Image (cartoon, rainbow, N blue to C red; front, side, top):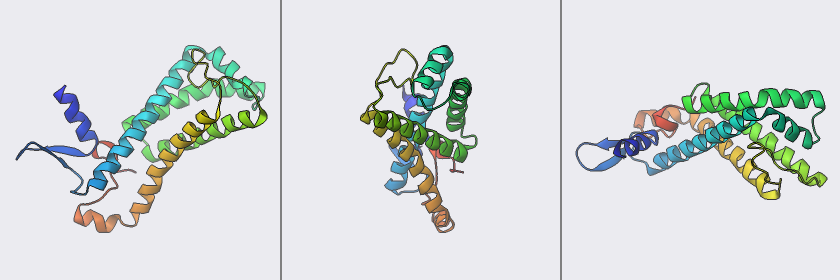
Length: 194
């Protein structure tokens, strides 16, 4: 139990201070940096878990996923088949990239774009008055597309965009802050956002 607590604290940008029972930030004394690291870590983990759950559910029952794609009435039969074939693998690769911090910038931006497309697709379903299940997590989950599901998907996309916006905003300021040691351009587990 203690080991997992230490791992989580390290992933959020803290280390154990041997001079006393205190967790100190590895990125400076600024609490905003530690809060930002926690935010980045939470958004990345939630997004990766979302991709894993969705991708595995769709791979478990690809025909149900194909039927779900076709119920949206946006893609034709051929393009719907391609979506159902490649999207689950793309989701699992995105999850691996987010967690492993491989091509981190691209995986965050692609995840944000994909979630934004999902939100707009759900919004089009509401606009057209269709009463269909979301199909986001397989046939077992039959949640009907509603306004709340559009907002949640859009909020997840905006959360990912906020990570990239903050990173870009701090790139010009990075030279000054890296000298002082108060750089907030650090992602989960103390890795620089690249």
